[in-house]
Image (cartoon, rainbow, N blue to C red; front, side, top):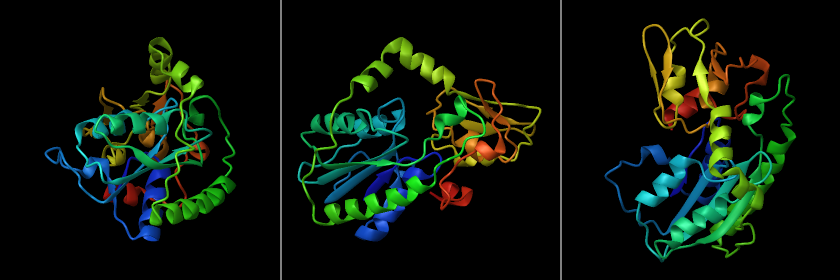
Length: 253
C-alpha cells in the first residue's frame, strides 16, 4: 500500500506512478477510515510533500494514530521544492516508536507551491518534473528489490530552526489562505479538493476553517483566483498544479 498526502498534485502523481511501476495501490491518508487503527501490509510506502522543512501535520497525526507491524518494509518519498529538511527523519522517528523503521527514503525535488506567497510572475521550471520521473523509476526499482538505503534519512538544522515556536507560527500565518468574497462565486471546488476537509461552501462563498494544513490546494486550484495568501491575490499565471494531475483527480482520490 502506498499512503499519500497531496495538495497540488506532486505527491499524488508520484504515488500513482509508483503504484503503476510496483504493482501496488495508492491510497490517500484521508481515505483510511478513522476506525482503521492497524495496517498490516507487507510493504508500506509514504509519499508526502515537505512543509516548513518537515512532515505535513496530517501525515504526522496519521502515523501517530495507526499501528503497523515490525516485519513490514517501510519506505518514504518526500516531494519538495528544494530539500526534504528533516521530514524523512521525523517519519523514521515516528515509526521507531512502534519498533518499526524506514528501510528506504528518497527525496524528489519538484516544484514548490509556496513561492506564490512572496513572488509574482513566477516561471516554474517544469524540467524538474522530467528529472523527478527518472528518480521515481530508480525508487521503484529499489522498492521492488526491497533495498535498504537510509542515506537520505537525516536531520536538518534549518528545519529545526524553522520549527521553533515563534518562527513556525509566523510561517503558518504567512501561508494561511483566506477567501476574497468579491471574487468567490461559491463553485465549491476548493471544498471538494481540500485534503483535510477544512473548507465549506455556502450559497454566497467558501469559508476556510481553523485546521488548515497549509497545502495551498485552494489557492492554486481556485478558477477565480478568489483565495488569497496573507491578503495577496494570486495571479492565474502563478497558480501551479502538477501538469498531469487534474482537479478531477484530486477529488477522486
